[in-house]
Image (cartoon, rainbow, N blue to C red; front, side, top):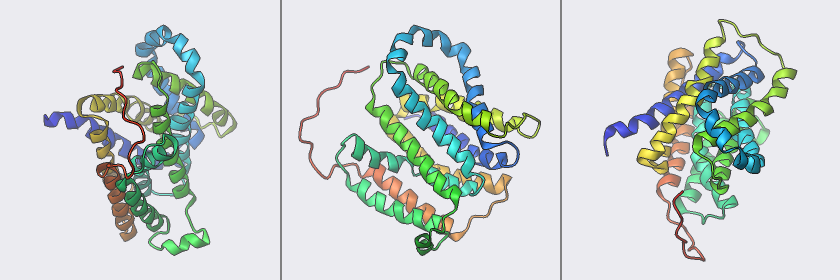
Length: 304
């Protein structure tokens, strides 16, 4: 396989990791409700000239599937990113990157619960390892402090946000819709903008100025539109499973970018918790043999 095929997923994860630092830089520069709404409004404006004709051609299917598209927009854009901006006020970009890397593992666990996929050895052992890693990270090296509910609000919100995004991936897999990827994304972003509009109007509407315009542009174009294009290309070239492995680089990239631009320091509990979480995620991705046999034989699926 040509090495150039690995550039799209690598670039995607690098941009996503940079967005963790953008989340931190937005604190004090723009309200969470403002940047959450404006980034997706900008993404919608950028995509409209290219995607709207296809959206109009598929409007009947969109009309039939709108409740599902609305929920996906709420989970994947509204809650995932909205909670991350609020979390940035009380946690670090390094912590955010480590906790965001739990998404593949959470996806495996939620798939077993919702899609009734048989549990795997990697999913169970990886889940235990990652859980221990999360307690080390949230407890700042002292997991017993969690018994006294000593958890930073931002860290707790990132766990919720990562769970929302994992659930987004599971429901996306469960609901088969006869829509092209860009049309489906566009519809989800439309609903996300609608969901994020009330908090934007009711919250502090931060004016756009020289201090925050760059943050909005980065979040709205590279982190929303370009990464979507690159990720779709990666999945097409090397497959979803191999592409998702690159997410494991997010904690490393996030920590390095945060050290350079924010002056954050990586403590021992970051290494310990991060390594345990990454070990759990990699285990879940590689040890995929089911512990129980399927009751029914696999049915051949028709290519879409």
